[in-house]
Length: 464
Ligand code: SAH
Image (cartoon, rainbow, N blue to C red; front, side, top):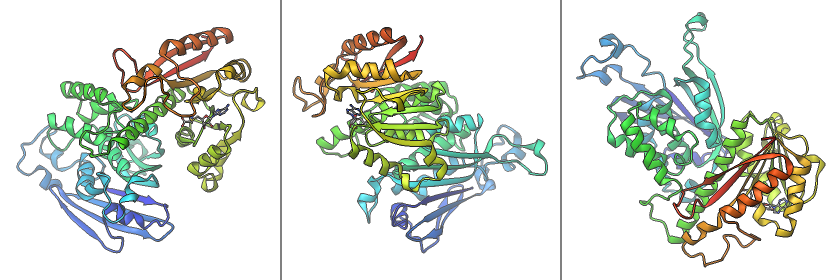
């Protein structure tokens, strides 16, 4: 099996520092089941690719074991040496362990930034097919290119539909990407090369920290990762829900940073929640109103379901941030055609916003002057009238749980108001009734029994 990791971050050879593997050398690492070799196939300022080749010793793998399911022949003749599975995860953690833990000795700052990364895995075993691959990777912001690999091109009827050549690309931290692969490859494959016990739950939670808690398919991922052992899966799922949005207790971070980490994770949870609603609605033409620096736009652009994406903001500076984040100058012409950034305000009716399937308005309404809320309502629900509207806003009740936030203070200097759950619901229901929409509310982030969740979301659907 081969895993290739490529970056176009400048200078691209920084990848060598991040992986702790010098691009000018060949690196060999002995594994309990074989050997991993890392070689660079490209290493200049523009592009750098590291390939990890994992040779599995099938005989070594079964030595000393009883003939299990499928008998002796199955033990020796199987797909394990060729497809990415838990063996690949073990190789990743042995060979790129320091990179996966987010450390970079020579250039510590490098490990903390998101860089453009592309990976390719020659053969990924995925029971459940392309749909499962998309379910797992899309919510994490990856662009996916997966093609099913035939067993033998001469005999298409032998096609192995569960084997895919997988290419993923995203702008992420390398440590995040390695953590995603570590958990998701065995989960796609559904079988493990070793016995699955309680410590596997810990491993899953440790490697999934910071992203799995808010992944819309976390339960499926956990079940498959734990080989459908229901008791272990339930344990993992309960702990994942507890951990939602909480920072790693082992991380030694200053108090201030801790608040930042919480906020960042909450924002990710919010964006994931909104993304999932848009995705599941089947929308193809979408608006992100008050798009800010373009984090949601980035996720939308990575999913090919969204054929026309328009981001609007009142701030030119934010639009410039979004332009940089999306790398509009470097996108392929096809991708550029799918996305447009426009300057405008939500409190004016605007013909450019008409005819869309869905609109997201994420953490924006609280920036509007309360006297302009009626105009906002009119411009979205009365004039633009997308089939689906997703609005999120902070839940003011939760503020008392934020240490350091004075009573009655707001979370952001530019917030003009913050609502309790019932204030948001009253406003949302009235807007829905007035304009012929149905509305459903849900919490975002860890839910406090009394105060609710830090953020709240309303999903409006035209006509019901
Ligand atoms: N939706 C983004 C940004 C939220 S911050 C995200 O979730 O990351 C709020 C954004 O709303 C800012 O970018 C601000 O410029 C924008 N905004 C404030 N008033 C606006 C208005 N009247 N019309 C459009 N955008 C507005």
